[in-house]
Length: 337
Image 1 (cartoon, rainbow, N blue to C red):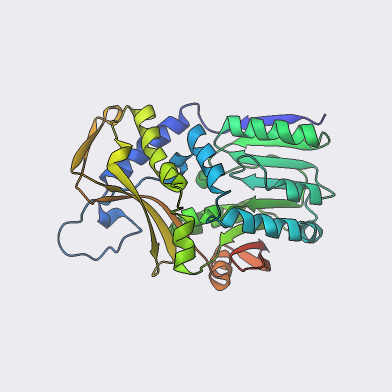
Image 2: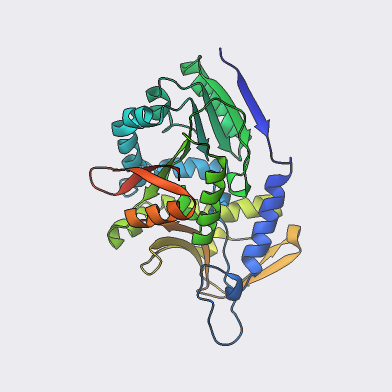
């Protein structure tokens, strides 16, 4: 069997430290320092509470998200898989990749279509913050494909990344539309960092959810059975468990809103009562007024011309654009300019 290597680039307490920093920043910052808000407002800047979506994904949150991907309302996973199945051979032919790097790899389930299609593939480099997810996915892959080399990286790809020395050409894949969870400035910084990883002959395969009818989008983020609501509230369970907080998830309501000006979905949690939440690990008490909303996710939706422009700004040239039959989701391939 080919070797499985795992490299940890995050300190042991990096996850806990990041959670503490994100919660403190997100629950105390003002609108004047929130890049998702309009900055020119009269009077004192109100507090705009938010939490990054990465904290949804503990073990329970990951199970809930897997359930979401099977719901009839939630199209992105099926649409992206449709493209991968139809276009994997073409992607393989165009890139000739010998190394496949996947950012935010998780279970690596969709990536297997690419792995199977790449005849010259030598090494797969999954990158994720979860060591257990990386190990589980690697064990599954190597049981099915014993000739594959797997070099997993425990790393936060949004904070800079150094790739192991593996044979080129390299194909860096960022799938699932996850780039939509980043604000525009964050996307620019991320794409710039990815460009820095690419040598001549390498390529980026990017998954982007597309702008579509508001009713379709809202249904995808607010399913009839309430799975997405449970997933959204799971961030409160995570903070309670990890930071000793006393959030009452039942005191919050799941909200999904389409922002037509920015062309992104927002998931929020709306406080049903006036309440004060204590977070002992931060020595912090946070007041929520009745009806006050806390943003837990943005999910930007894209148009082809916008993707091309953002890639160009990062020094990448879009060379291929594929969508599913219903034009709901896109995979794009780009190379260093």
